[in-house]
Length: 384
Image 1 (spheres, rainbow, N blue to C red):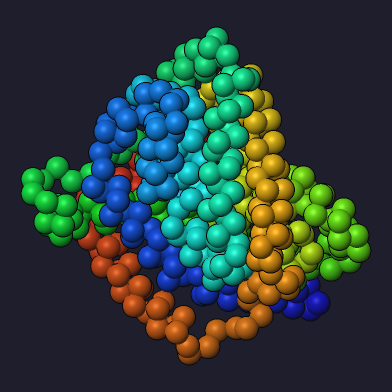
Image 2 (image 1 turned 90 degrees about the vertical axis):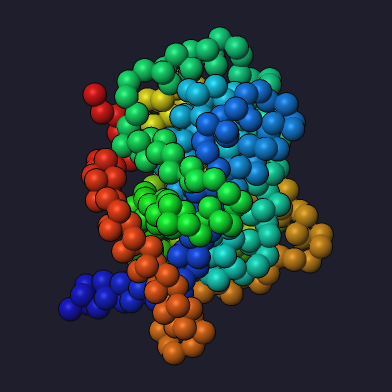
C-alpha cells in the first residue's frame, strides 16, 4: 500500500502541474502556428545564408517565432542547413526556437516566476553570441563540409518530415485577410496539432518525472548535491551540474520546466536552474541525432560548444540578477501542492480548451489524420 500511495501522490502532483500550465500551452502553440502559417520556410532559408551578425539576428527572431519542440527544432535546423543556410545560422535558429519562444516564457512565469522567464530571455542571446564566436574559432571549413555531406544523406526522419512540412498560407491579400481565410484556419489548425504531436511526449514525461522527483527524492539528497550549506560554492557549482542533470533526465522542450521548478525548490542555484533549462538541446537522444545528422566529430563539437556556452550563460544571469536584486528566494516555485480549484486557471483552461477543440476539429476535418501518420516513429529516426 505504501508503494501505491507514493505512486498516487506523484501522479497527483504531476496532474496539478499539468492543470496549471494547460491553457498557456494552447496559447503558445496557437501563436506559434499563426506565425508559421504566415512565413514560408523557403524564405527563411534564403535569409540565413551566412553568419554575419545581421543574419544571425534574423535567425534568432525567426527561431523565436518557430516551434518550441527540441526534436522538431533540431530537425528543422538540419532542413535549413540542407537548403543553403549557414551552419551557424541554423544552430542559432535552433537555440532560439527552444529557448526564446513565447510558450516557454509563459510556463516559466506560471511555475517559477517572472525572474526565470526574464533570465531565459536574457541568457538566450548570450548563448547565441557565445556559440557564434566559438564556431568562428572551433568549427573549421572542412568540419562544416563534412557535416553538410552527412546532412545530405538519407531521407528525412520522422521529426524532420514534420519540420519540413510547409503549411504556410498561399492565398493573396494582407496578413489578416490571409490568416482569417478558410485556408488560414486550416493551416493554423494543422501546424497547431502537429506541434502538439511533436512535443506531447516530452511534456508528459517531464510532468511525470517532476512529480516523481518532487514526491520521492528526499531534500537531503538535493541539498548535498547542490551544496546548499555553502552558498558561494553552490552558485559556482549550479551552472555546471544543472546541464548535466538535464542531459541525464532525457526531458526537453517545455517539458523540462516542471522539473526545473522541483530543482529550484530543492536548492539548485538560480544560474544552475537557468543552465538546466538551456540544456534541452544536449540531452542524450538529441546528441545521437546530431551524430546521425552531422557526424560524430560535429556531435562532440556541438556538445562542447553548447555546454560551455550554457554554463557561461548560467554564470552571467546569476551575476546580473544578483547585482540587481532580482534573484528570488528558494521554495517559491509551483510544483503541484495547491491542487485544483475553481479560479482563474480553471476559466482560462476552459476558454483555451474550446480553442484547442476548434483547431483539432478543423485538423481532422481537412485530412490531418494522414499527416499524423507521416510522423509515426521515434524522434529523429531515419527512414529508408
